[in-house]
Image (tube, one colour):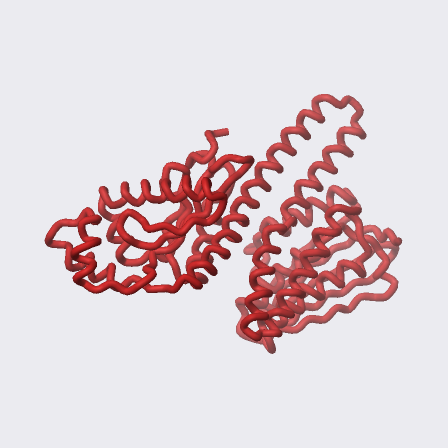
Length: 402
């Protein structure tokens, strides 16, 4: 693997397009500029929501070099203080840096800011700050106007931004550590395959390793930090519905974390309770545009199914079916026992698509893989879809009761 914190190392550890999307969302939500930089200050993601002044500055070769040095300085000193750091960049703007630390080493920095703590007069800018800029005399007026247009925030806003910056940095670290853990797990699994001679033992250990790798991708510890902040803010702002929604989502995550450390197979009734939490959250999100129906025979509730096998299917129905549709959406989940097998279907009346246009994302691929690992050829998975009608996913597995 490439050296820790280098651009090459990051490309091996995480999908940079996915990382860019996360930074874009964070920058838009906080109304600040944001970027992730390597340890030497090189921009790892395309700068998100940057102000006109900083775009002008980075378009200048000398200015870009100064920004990279300033970003690298922010990361190093944030590491020294052990958390988010507020500092003034080389051109007079207020920036914040949060170190990205993996296995005890600094691998990069999450930076945001491009704000001022007080308004400046044009005279002050020309006298105190213009000398810091690498601009020609003919460009000074444009640079000054862009600087004066920067947003002015108070210290409370900066402190709130630091808290959320720290949460976002934890999320990025979580994604990277997850990949590293899975890579090491794969390496250990391959060593086990070489060491074991018994075919049945080899297959059993490999299956368990694969299942654990899949479970690790469903382990959202980082989100509890965000939920705690959201719940406190909702309470202070007098928003009981927002606070209740946050608590409901936390319960949903706790179910996931609690079950991941136990048996892989759980009763269908438990999974339905988890789905109700998820669907209730979506109900709040879409309001009257969304409803759901759970139609499961009582005899099927005790059947055991792989943990969290239905959630990716239901999520796809909401995100790819209901959300893009203009008409009120319904998700219908049915379950029954037929000839000793449990049949489950998830149907939506969303946008649908032609059968040849169906694309199986990461969630559906993992569902199919886990079904194969548990049941082999005894399990079936099918998708039907039609444009402007909707999509239906069907699963059929052997029924194993409690």
